[in-house]
Length: 94
Image (spheres, rainbow, N blue to C red):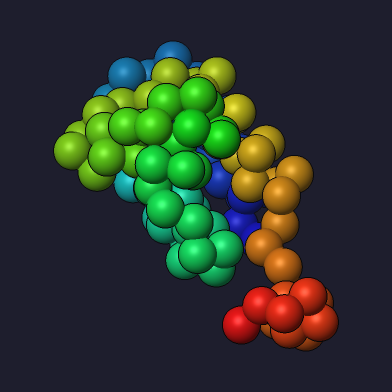
């Protein structure tokens, strides 16, 4: 998964505001990939990850998250990996 590399890049960003503005692109890509794999709605993801059902919509509209929020999102994704296909079938899923 690309989260480790993403966090390394985030640490390199430091306090440079211009680079922080670019962070939503890779973060949104990570979120979109996770939502696709888990078939989770944007509303559910935002509510579960950061307590904000409009979080993903805000990112799509250009909202820039703070670094602690980015870390919460990445931690959420790393803590809840998408199920493997075989496991999902065994439970009666797709």
